[in-house]
Amino acid sequence: MNDGASNHETESDAAHPCRACESPVRESAPTFPFCSERCRMVDLSNWFGGKYRISREIKDSDLETVD
Ligand SMILES: [Zn+2]
Image (cartoon, rainbow, N blue to C red; front, side):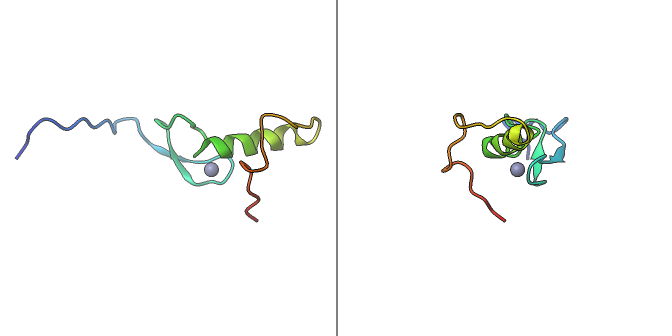
């Protein structure tokens, strides 16, 4: 049976590894290429970690060190 009511877009929805934690993240994700906003922040902090220090934008509560 086909209702034709399904609204699915999987054509270009390939999954890629998150740049921060390597979890699969879809291209359609708003946070792509990261799986989440948190990972994006983590990656940013890594980028700037060497030269700059971010004391704003990122909150400790957002960055849980899972190691
Ligand atoms: Zn991630």
